Length: 347
Image 1: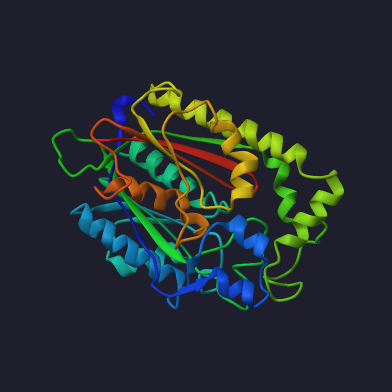
Image 2: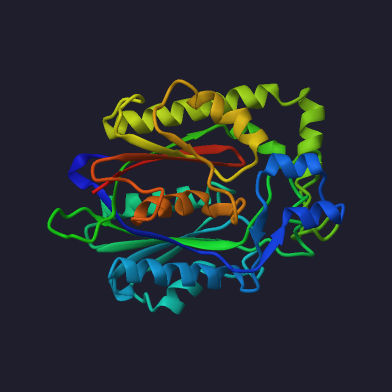
């Protein structure tokens, strides 16, 4: 990303439902163990009654209002998701565009597991950079991990899945336009596709969704993968190497050193302590300055939305914020595997 085409994040927002499921209730019901609850390090996660795309629409309206952006000015809309969007054969991105009145926007769906929000952000940045006819772009995510197809507490290891929508409004940076909250100084990705089988295990390819038993069971293929490959160490080392590589590359493109005192915050994906301790925290220890943020209380893991939700932390004046000129580093990742890193600077 060259300085000749800096991208401004004019607003980043979330829409999180008010209803909650509590960790203590899940332990009492035998859904998770007390040890698993301690590892998740949250007391509650949001549970939605709305379909996922409607949460994206609500988050998008907040972002458009905050950016004073008319939906008719949007030339591009990228929607990322992890789990079922309400219909089996359908385009949620087009639905979101229609609900917003963004008739001039090209809608695009992005699926890259939990990294889909970051990937959608990258596509929007590329679109703005390459096409001067796109005045503004919108990125959204939304996921709803509802039963019976998904057990948000026990479907996976080291993750509790929360429901919610996120959105961000992007434009090419214009120093004369006062709306920008953040400058996206860099966005980098690192992939290790050889680990895609962790979510496949020994399972055969199926002819239809939820074919084996009508629900998502992430633990089964992961357990099979660990048995086939003699444990987690090979993956853990590769994950740390990828996180380190994507972090250092994003900082280099942004033109700052890891020890730059202007790096105020480093925001991590909204995952359990065990996952963060396996692949993120060992890399950061002694390498990067800034406070480490684990903003997962009352959200859990927002599926595709962690990166945009973390950008929303810095898009407003609310704590934790950024003073003018300060930087935040936002790390992400998703199964497959791809890791991401965004560096933003307060205007």
